[in-house]
Length: 174
Image (cartoon, rainbow, N blue to C red):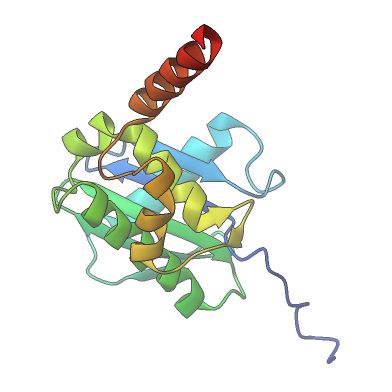
């Protein structure tokens, strides 16, 4: 391999976060602990990204040595962050999968209020798409379908836990 080319890696995504239109964090997952180790550094990075992107129509930004793809939806901003040499199309695939999965899960009502009300399911969606910085799934239908054991579109985590408690209770009584 050429000495100037970066080593290929499965660890594509460095961070993924969702902000509202007032720059408040609703969800953030940082997959590289060396990138921004403290909460203060993460929030400063998010503010910097938000300030540079919230008034633009483009979908890609290069800030602080990072490749950032983003999309807005009503009062939300979705961001996927990769290294400077990361393939923008791969990052955009993750972003589109996240956006479409949320669209399916929230029944086309992707806005702050519905996202906050279904935050447990949103975390499950994010975890189905990216795990530790590795892209696991890029098909929104598959992301939602994987939740069929505990359907993301129909049940909350609390409902699943309640159902499991009832099953355990009945198995003890038998």
